[in-house]
Image 1 (cartoon, rainbow, N blue to C red):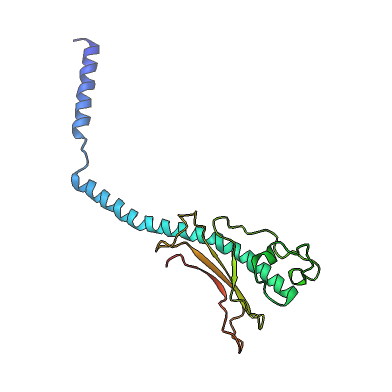
Image 2: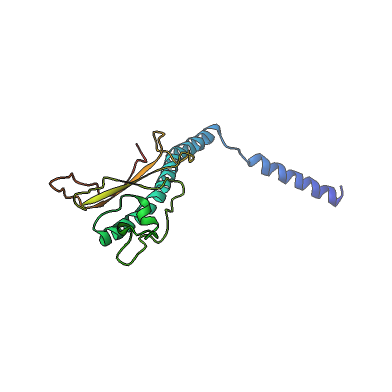
Length: 183
C-alpha cells in the first residue's frame, strides 16, 4: 500500500470518528429554545409598541410647550391670554390691532407650529373675566392613520396654562400636559 493511500485511509478513519461522536439537538432542547424566544417576544413587542406611541405624543407635547411659552409671553405683555393661535404665531401683524402686539411689537414665538403630524392648536377654556388660565388642544392629522391611541381614536394632546386656583366666577383651570395615548 502506498503512502498516499495509507494517508487517505487515516483521514477517512479520523473523519468517521469525529462524525460519529457528534450529536444533534434533541427535540426537547429545541422546544425549550422556542418557548424562551416566545416569552421574550411576548414581553418585548408590547413594550416596543408603547414606546412608539410615547414618541408620537412627545412631538405634540414639545410643540405645545413652545405654544404655551408664547402664550405666557403674550399674557405678560397684554394681561390676558391669546384667543387664537395666530396672535402668538406671527407676533405683531401689520395692522393697528393693539391686542396683537406686545409693548414693543414683540414676536411671541421663535418658530411656528413644529408638529407636522398634528393640527394647529386650538385655544379653549379662555377666561375673559380674569386672566387665570387657558388650554391649548391639538389632534393628530386625519391623514396620519398611525397616530392613533390604543382604542383606535386619533391622539389628542392638551397643555393647560395658568393657575389651579379657582376664581369666584370661574372654575379651576387644568394645568399641565396630557395626551390620550392609552384611552
